[in-house]
Amino acid sequence: MLTRSLLFTTLLPLALADVQFTSPAAGATLQAGKPITAKWQDSGDGTALTDLTTYTLFLCAGGNDAASIIQLAPINANGQFSAGNEASATVAATLGGADKNA
Image (cartoon, rainbow, N blue to C red; front, side):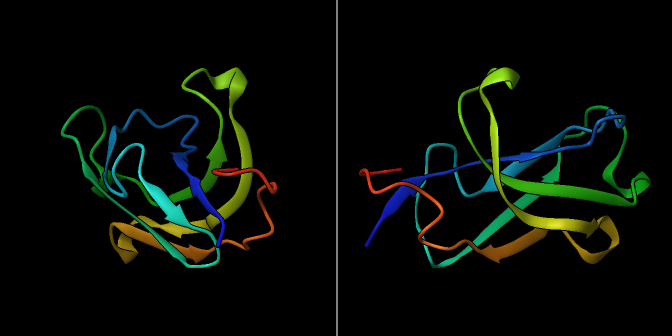
């Protein structure tokens, strides 16, 4: 079964909150076709997460440079911070290529 390294990112374009992801760990290898759960906490820097209302979370590929990041699939396109500090989705195994860790 295809496995891939996944990069998660939040898109909070105007908020200065600092979300600290606690799961999956950076560089984790996750299995395609299985549920992916991202968990986070407030880092204590910037705007508190309790002051925010919505977020969008995508599965992305690429590097740390914004120009190299590609959005692959939404994990939660209409997230509500009031619903808790985690989001889950199943990403199709066909999303990546046929190469190892694609």
